[in-house]
Length: 248
Image (cartoon, rainbow, N blue to C red):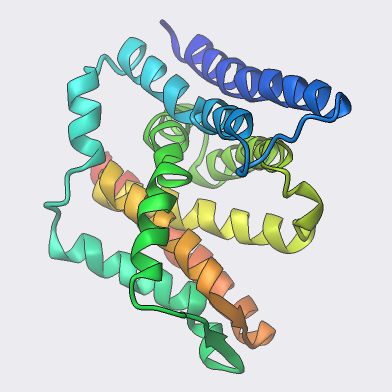
């Protein structure tokens, strides 16, 4: 399988699968059937749609990158990483959420809530990294620059997310512009971490932690947020350029 076919098959498979589920969800709702987290059929629809990026990421990783399923699963749960890898995660997360320290707040009703949210986030969030950061963007970067590859991934990932929100039943609750800007920054964070660490687990963990913090934080200074997001993108580009220089 060549690069062009690998990218096309990933997008057709990932978006095609979730759009089929969207279509079925639309039909069921028109017949008055509830499809969301509160019903068995909703959970099934969310599961099938939500795992599309991971499923097709695995398929392309096996066919194009010649990786085994065992190798991919090992990478997914490989907690043993360099201390510097975890340090970069802390730096990015600190920048991404430090605006909460200026007029915002952390809302935690019980100590175990973030733990439960983290586990859930791995299954409904972190697993996406098998497709987007582990497979799709690295293949894009074989042909395009890091920045362009990140933007292309952001656009495709954005379309996928809004389709997922429709299945989940939360599409009308999403603040489109804020979500899109946050997703773009997250694309730079996660792609830079993969470029720096070459670790699927680091991306899975970071993605999950971003989801958790997004659910337990509220408010924050928007000027600080804007500045920190600019800094994040600068650091991400610098890390990617460093990787490219080492690869030459």
